[in-house]
Length: 273
Length: 356
Image 1 (cartoon, rainbow over the protein chains, first blue to last red):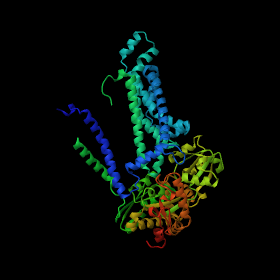
Image 2 (image 1 turned 60 degrees about the vertical axis):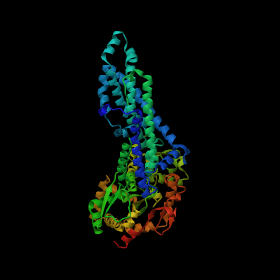
Image 3 (image 1 turned 90 degrees about the horizontal axis):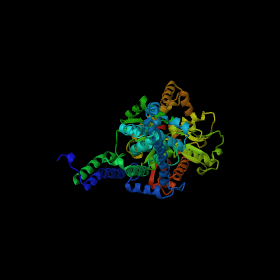
Image 4 (image 1 turned 180 degrees about the vertical axis):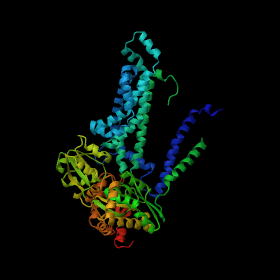
C-alpha cells in the first residue's frame, strides 16, 4: 500500500503526536543536566523542578513587595488587553469588511487605502502611537488593533466578495432590501470565516501584546518576561512561555468550538486543523 | 514506534550537545573573547580593537583576544553568563545580580569609572525631588536607574511605596517623555542630557549625589583568569596604554576621543560632556586605590540589599548575604562559602607598578 493511503489507528496517532513533545523535553533535560553539572546555579537552562517551583511561586505565593499573586495579575492584565483589542478588531472587521465587500462605492473609497495601511509594520510607528494614545492601556490596545484590524477587514471583505453571485441575485429577485441581505445572507456566510480569521489573527495579536507590554507597563505576561530577563531568570521565563502557549491554544480551541456550535453549516465539509 | 522513540531521543541528544558544552573549563587557552556595549566609559573597548592596541598586547603574550560589541547591554551580560564570552563590561550591580547571582564566579579585572552625574532623575514642570511623591516614574526597572531612584528617595525620606514605577524600555524613553502622561523619568546618558534639554525638564537628582556607587567594570570569568593570567595582563596593559592617550590633549588623544565619539553617535564636544559626568580612572594606580577603598564594601552592601529587596538575588536567597563578595583586603561581604564576585586590584596594581 502506498504511504498516503496508510492511516494510523487512533492510539498510534496520539503516540506519534506525542513524540516531538517528548523529544523536546528530553533534549532540554539532557542539555540542562550537563550545564548544571558544570555550574549547579546555572540560570540558562534551569531544571524542571526549579521551573516548577518558580511557577508555583508566581501562581500561589503572594509577592513580597506588593502582596499580589503575580501570575494571575499578569494573566488577567494581558488577557484583558488582548480581549479588548481583538474585540475592537473583530467589530471593525465586521463593519468595514461588509461595507467594503458589499457596497462598491465604499470599496472604491477604502480598499486601496486599507491595502496600503495594512502593510505598515505597526512597531515602526510606535512614537506616533505614544503621542496619540499616551503610554497607558489605550496605547497597548491600539497597537493590537492597528496590527490586526486591517488584515481582518481585508479578509472579511474578501469573504463577502466570495459569496456566490447567484445567491445575491436570488435574494434580490425575492425582493430583499440591502439590510435584509446583510442580516440574512451575508452575516451567516461571513461570521464563521471571521472566526477563522480571528483565530489566525490571534498569533500576531499575541506578538503585538508582548511587544506593547515590553515598552511601558506595570503588569502583564510580556512585562514580567522582559523584566526578569534583566537577571536571566529563565526559571520564570520558560514556564511563562509555556503558560502563554497554553492560553493561546485554549483560546484557539474555544473559538473553534464556538464556530462548530454556532455555525454548523460551515463545518459540514470535513477535516479542519 | 519504539524505534522512532529511540531515534528521536538520539536526535534530541545530538541537538542538546552543543548547548551543554562546558563553558569555562579549567585549562590553558589561547583564544579569548570579551564583549562590551555602548556607554561613554566603555567606548575605549571598541577603539582598542579598531586601533590594533589590543592585538599588540595580545601578541606580546602570545594569545588572541577578540573584543566584540553587542548592541543590547543586558544581552551582552547574558551572553557572558551563558559562557559565550570570557569577559564583559558591566556595572557592579548587574555583575552581582546576573553572573554572580547565576553562580558564575566573576572577577572585577578593570575598574574603569564610576557614574558621577551620568544617571539622573528628571521631573516635568516640578523642580524638587520631594515632588516625585505620588507620581508615576518611568525607568528601566531593576537597572541602575532603579537603584539610583531608591537611593535618592532615601535622602528625602520617601520610599518606593510612595510612587508607581513604570517599566519603560530605554529605547523608547525620549518618545515616552514627550507624551503628556509621563511626568518623571530616571535614565542615563546620552538619553539624560537629551531629555534634560527640553524646556519643562528639571534634573532633581543625579549620580553625583551618590559618588562611587554606580561603578563600570570589565568583569572576567574568575576560573579563566586564574588559569590564564596572560589574558588579564594583556587586557589591562592594552586598556591603560589607551587611557594614557585618551586623557591627554595630544593629537593622538583627540583623534581617539573623536573616533569614540563617532562610534557612540555624537561628536567630540558631546563625548567630552559625557566624560565630564563620568569619573574615569585614567591611571591603574587610581583604579587600584579605588578598589581597595573602604567605601567599596559599603557600596556593595547597599547594592546587595537593594537587589535582595527587589527579589533579584533569586527567590531562594534567604538574605542579602546569599552571594559572597570579596574585596582587596580579603574581607568578604555575605556568604564566605559562596563567593561569586571578587574585587581584586592585583592586575591593576601590576600595571601601576610597571610589571606588565
